[in-house]
Image 1 (cartoon, protein in one colour):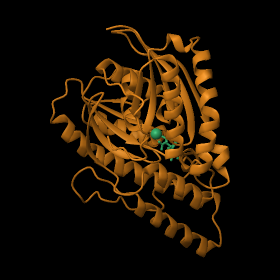
Image 2 (image 1 turned 60 degrees about the vertical axis):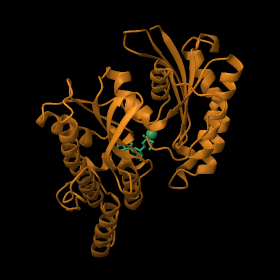
Image 3 (image 1 turned 90 degrees about the vertical axis):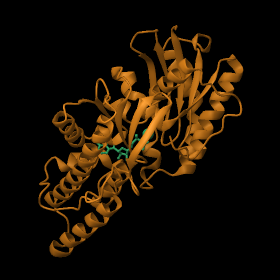
Image 4 (image 1 turned 180 degrees about the vertical axis):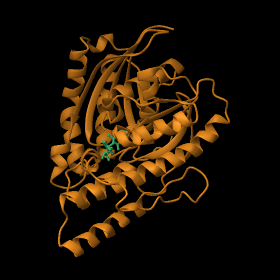
Length: 347
Ligand code: KG4
Ligand code: ZN
């Protein structure tokens, strides 16, 4: 073993990011720098991420982002042991920008190139932040993903189930649009729900009658649309309280589904007899306080440790990619100039 210093690049959705992570053998990993250029304002007028605009912004920003990450870490490329990059899944234009940039850096410096699956980056974050031991149960909930993973090693994931349609983050974003709240929808719906009554509107808890860990969230937005239109028809408009109650009802439904499905995933996980059983959550939706608390409750019920990364490491960032690259480096899993950018790439 030895000290490894890895540069990571991330550009698969609407954040251009670069970071440097270092780990001395046998010690906790350290984030030496983590730079994120968000694109929220660029997409604001369109009500969602526009792939062509995202791709251009990544292409423009990725080099400067890398430069800043190295400068903030007080390093040059010569001090880096490997270059990790998100090679998918994601919007292909952005992923290509990252992969091309990483290939250029690797070719220019002679350092090894390491392609990282974006989902593996999220899934390994609890090891970066809390040195969680394998195997642990991971609930990955973001704008594009929702799945339960049994994380057995840096390159060993078993999917226990997941959404069959929308991801919860997507549902939060659509809910915000229906209620006239700003994007990204997660934080604005959560803020609105604070003053709402979650019991006024009883939204469905889809698929709880079905066995297993699969989930569905698309029906929820239809229910929300119907409830909203009914209120609008009755009172010819939405009051502040109506909006808060709708947001609270929606959030409670998502939380209840995630809690119940986590109970089931836990049963499968605990049958593997982990020594230090841990439930971890990652992805943008893990920033939601009410959902975090729900998952914490389920973990406590089962005597299992619960961990959630700090907010900045729940949403897209490059520190998680650098760290996943570091774990791959230790396994000797490298890539070369044939590395391809993949729009779809299941774990
Ligand atoms: O992981 P992420 O940054 O990007 C990917 O989807 O990979 O997650 C972004 C998603 C968005 O849909 C956003 O609305 C949601 O995470 N989100 C939240 C919260 N903060 C962000 N959802 C619920 N509550 C939040 N506080
Ligand atoms: Zn993500």
